[in-house]
Length: 211
Image (cartoon, rainbow, N blue to C red; front, side):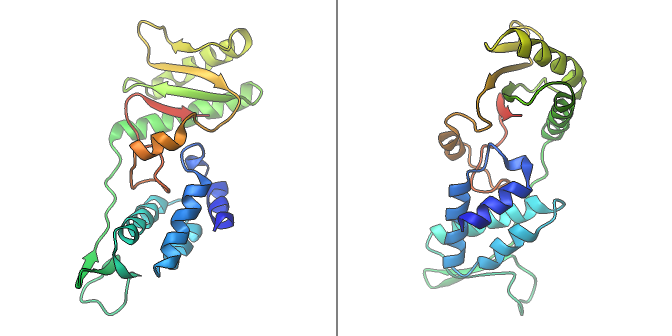
């Protein structure tokens, strides 16, 4: 299963630094043991559009398997109405329809802002790893000036930086030797969220990112 987990993470850059390959492999193994290997296949085959819906179903399936649900099946045929998951526990049959809540507008804005920061950085400086902590105030309007700040700091300092200033901080960041977040495993467990594979960190404020 580790090969399949590695394949998934290599294809979907958005999960780098948040999803651990060993945790994802263990989750895939759990699903396979409980008759839900079809969900593993769906996860690997899913295009980028709609991927998070499959990720949610994958995580919910693992949750059910770990909570003593048995005879699990995914999208079984012949049901009176379509359902995502069916399972038995305590002599009762349960049917589950899984829905992913839409991301808050602030998450979408910050995701676009970080993509723009990454794009600009890739074109102007040598590859570096950055760990950023962003606040709710961070948005696309800060991308250009933040890139200028990072370019300057890459030449002058390896200490923690505050943008635009320490007093009015919107983003703090420092340079690291690895793309993996420090203590990421502990943070993943504390911030479990069904919208990412293998319980990665969910968004909070401040939120840590690696670029």
